[in-house]
Amino acid sequence: MSEAKAAPLKRVTLTLARSKEFPMGSTRYGYEIIVPLDGNDRIDVATWKQKRADCTVRHFAAGQPDLSGMLVHKPGGREHVQWVFDYDRSRADDDEAGFLFGSHHFRPGEYVSVRGPDGKLTTFAVAAIESVA
Image (cartoon, rainbow, N blue to C red; front, side, top):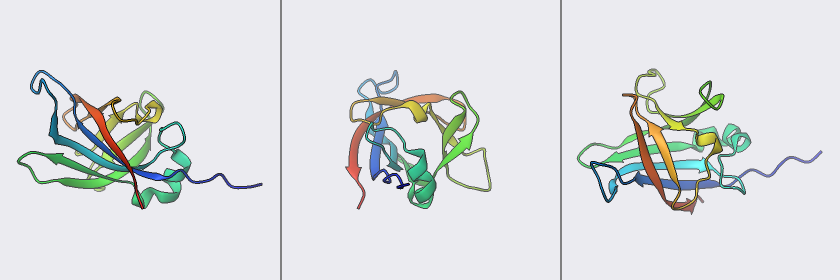
């Protein structure tokens, strides 16, 4: 029995989509995520399990220091699993959850939403995807 080939790690940049506060969106607010994407541009759970230490997130926001954390796969939620940006493993109140990340296609121009620790859902555009060496 042969093992499945690991999905490649990608650097996915999400930037703030258009909103009432930002009618043109903003490249000054967003996330940079290192994540394995399969051939359909979806998060590959099997590869994440193998390379979870490499799956990171950086949150950037104008005028604020960057936050660095890990992309974590947790049970529960609407899709029976949650992808979470975990900035401090000793706390849960700072986590941000990707809304239905398990079923999204991560392709430039697509939109995804992130639920902040305050419970507010914010929409981001997939601005760029690059291979990680």
